[in-house]
Image (cartoon, rainbow, N blue to C red; front, side):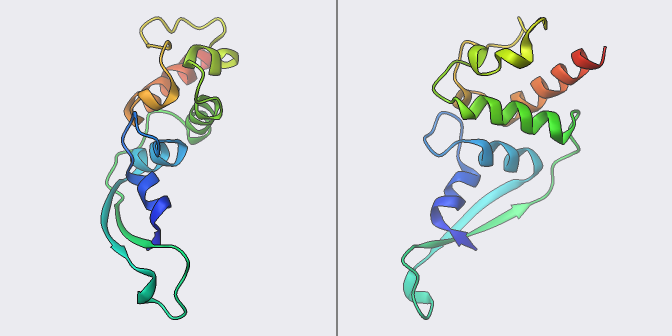
Amino acid sequence: MMQKEVAQRLVALPRTKDYGILSVQTQLMSSPEYLFDVKPGSFSPPPKVTSAMVYVHFDKPALACSDKMLKTVVRKAFNQRRKKLSNALKSMIQGVDCSHYDLDVRAEEWTPDIYAEFAAYLEAQVSE
């Protein structure tokens, strides 16, 4: 159980207002499922916010990249979410051929799987 707004971020889809760092990282590690809202009156004393129940299935396989690389890529992308990824990730992609990735989109347009694939690709390029 958590605050409704946080639960909505966990399960948010790409290209939505709630989609962000928390969505990407949660969905890469698990399959979150929004179950139902819990009204403030269900508690004593009642909080000022609505809560929600979320079931988190930790059913995803291990990623091909390190947690550190994934977190760096996702955070850099979403810290400047109104910029295109080519600008937001500029410091990470200098000298790396990223032509098979669409970097002319904004952070909220990539799915969690693309972030994981891109982070693994960058990590492989850096280690060469």
